[in-house]
Length: 278
Ligand code: HPA
Image (cartoon, rainbow, N blue to C red):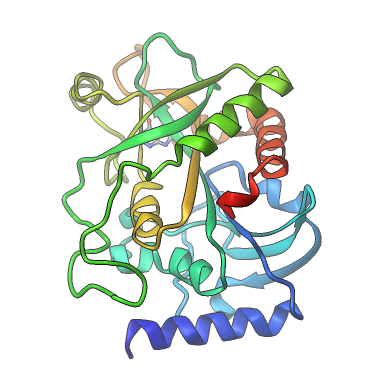
């Protein structure tokens, strides 16, 4: 089946559950940040496995469902659990939900993730507004036949992380008294964490954080000219910075520790999301 037909079926299924409500912002919650979805009001919950053509999530700590409802006066569609390349999904599958969002009329995308902190001036537990990314992974979700209905063959990435939305996020953090960082996120495939040498390389290349998600989604969103912003929760110092091994438990623990300020920041940003970026 053609991509556009599949998307039309996914869209129709989701719309059939929404009773005419129109989500305006798509939110993806990363590792350990999924609880945020529980605070969405008047929620309609749709399990991924019920949506025609949707992939299904496999990672512990990731639920696999859409939560659609009200957050700070806006109707949002929140993904509790995302699809990672390391799980074995193709890039097409990884970005399928983003394309579904666009089909539903959503033009604003809020990406979150857990990431390793590469910048040695910063600390585990810091939140980072993503200003740009580096894609080391060779695969690109737009490789292959271009879905012309969604966007053009070649497309700009200079506004992949919308500069006005970065400013909105900075202001929101300031108002909440949260000391937020701004920096560059670099994609690795995972599921192995990076080596110490890869982290040194990432730093020299200009990265402040390393992680295993977000970049394909931001690329697909740019292709469809969506207004995107991203925030990383820097759950651990990246490999080799501290004299200790990395583990997924630390990622989840830090996520747990900062989830209050993280949720507050997400809310404040949603509240002040500008109308011209919807
Ligand atoms: N590396 C890659 N992905 C991650 C990390 C890390 O150190 N921490 C959380 N996600």
